[in-house]
Image 1: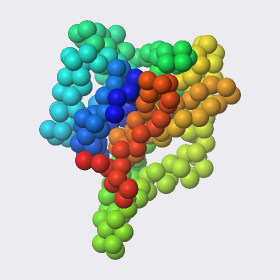
Image 2: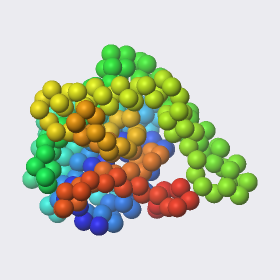
Image 3: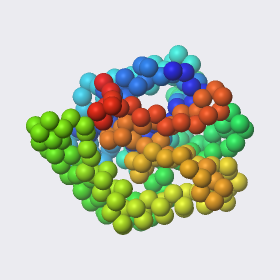
Image 4: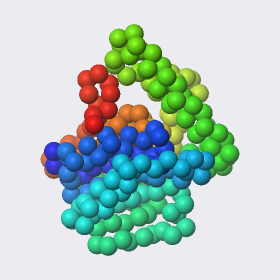
Length: 251
């Protein structure tokens, strides 16, 4: 498929949980005039603990650079996990690749969107980094449990993938409250700055909705949900889920 713009975030290259191969498959099948990488593309936090970098992770970088060389406008908006880039921003690499803390996007309909990873609007990440790092450890433990649980599910003949970490995120009261607060804070900031909407990542929850007349759009992640936010040439917004019917990522 060919789109006006593709937005992806939270690929977390450098971790064993990154669905880099699925993302490569998605990029081969989908093209766009604009590609927005909305933060946490490279996981500097995880690589400090244990370096995990496979060929597919290098292939993702090469694929993005190749798209830029061939004319795709690539905008890399940094997140908290790739914050190691922030001291050097803004960066312009060639004619079509820019690295920045935030961006503005103008849609086909002429609406203006504030593009940010979202960590700078997360009070925990911003003021209690130690707690954010601890939470990152906990999330990694849940992802490991996902693998174990689904191994036993397959042994019982249940092939559809099930995510404990997603269940916790969607159902635990404190988690739901945090996500709601995060979305509201971002929407209010966009409204205060005169934007029509906000596009972000960070919380690994793909979403398109309206919050107090502000269009909130989240591109999700490539650790669990394998999702991308896209705008068509007709101005339609969609969330693409790169999964098979059995709930497993497309490869």
